[in-house]
Image (cartoon, rainbow, N blue to C red; front, side, top):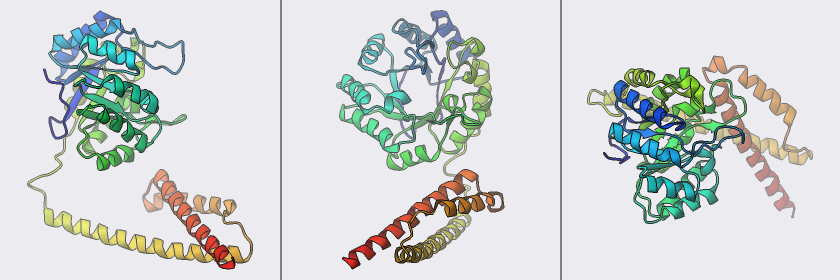
Length: 359
């Protein structure tokens, strides 16, 4: 039974099990049903649940650790659970949990992460770190750095999406660019996807899981319960073991490289994209030169840099043409905001230079 999580190893790594350990019978039965329906690499269960409201079910606590460990032994696979403080770490290690993970609400707090890192000094155990609730890449990377400094050498990331207010589709928006950026910064770090917390709805799990595979994630962590509709926490996003098996069988696993790849054809296409990128930045350079001209005009006529009404009209006009450009509203808005900020920077520089000249 190996709890190793390594980049370039088996793909996808599958971690499954209930959101929360509720009873010993629930843990064992869920594990046995999973065994009948599919093969997984690790059994999960929440023992302590950081809930938004104090009257919500917050986990069974330490007693559930033995249920999880024994269920893992029934399947002959490692176990994993979330820890949020030093006491959790001590109890999980004592019970024999094989892998720990740090949740999103803990990752956001460097003090809490440091306490966990200090508690793990001298311990050889894999640790997974979920992204913080807000899309802060540096905060996420900082958590890995704290654990590395405590001697934890086997680390992995879990992308569970980011909290927003009343999103129309997902419980947590994926913001796929954040885990992609994490991979660019830490290329040897395995990254798993948590479609359960992104979707918040079991009907969306196949869609999110396939997207993660298409983006070359190393695995999935999926909440699975013997009777999801009666689950004590996050019922809507959990699957039955049988449904988990169907989902895993439906996944299309694409190779990163292929011997059949027409390298000449794709090289030509990439060269064309490179040329277009060069032209795009040349156009942006000219645009910023015009922004500087506007900055000089505003300086000469004592006009403020920010012109909110003009900006609103510009944004409205551009967003009205997203379908024509075949671009998403979100992407268009992000591009326009970035251009606007850079334009302001150029205008501020022009005004400051003008002030320096006057002095």
